Image (cartoon, rainbow, N blue to C red; front, top):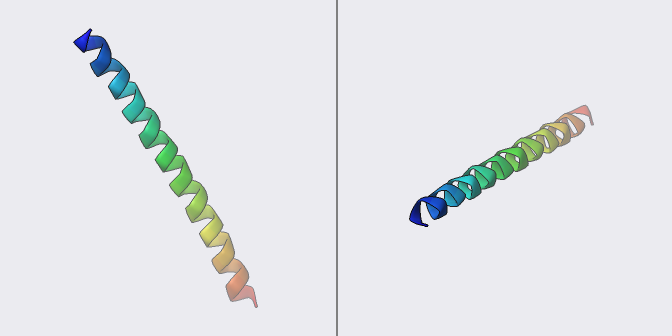
Length: 41
């Protein structure tokens, strides 16, 4: 049972990290786009 818990915990951790990374990637893309728009003016 402990091994199972350990495995599911790892899956949750990996899932959380991938969600955070994708969110950061989207945010940086939006920020870059915003900066381009600002410098255009």
